[in-house]
Image (cartoon, rainbow, N blue to C red; front, side, top):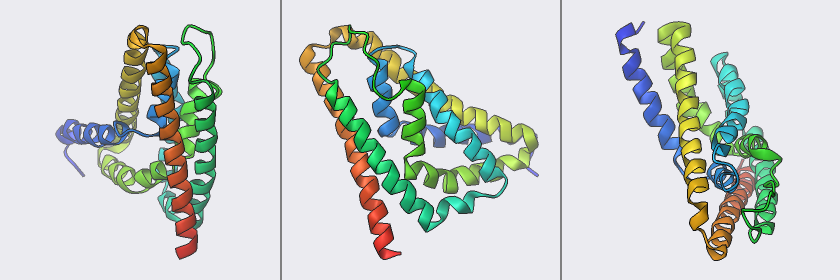
Length: 212
């Protein structure tokens, strides 16, 4: 059993590992930027959608289901399905790249919460992170009892919340400086990020299926 005085040190390691993951550009970042152009708090809503997948997953891992995330069939299925969904989302973002931010146009991802949920649930590397690093953190959190488990989960999600909110807030506050050309470039970049990850997920799924 770990000493209670080590809990703050453990949570500091959770913050470090969590930020190293959430700050990496990816599909969730792309949809946060796209939604942040219309609402400064969109990042918080994306984090809620992300949490709707992540929190139940943490519970499953806590009760010993981490091995399911490492099954070849699960990895292949998530990779192929996730890749197709991300490419579809990329096409939707690309379609509206020329629309003015002043227009009351909803990003076509069923809202910021839905966008966070979909980009999280279709990312196979999110599940790999939780089957490895996340599972190890939960194992360490057990040493602090229920308090450690709750504190670890809350700390991790608050890192997601803080970073994604910061992104959407910066995007929203700076959008008045964006020319139509810059706007098209940013939305085009978001579309490329989504499409790129989608293509990579599909390739990874096919490669795994061929060599399994």
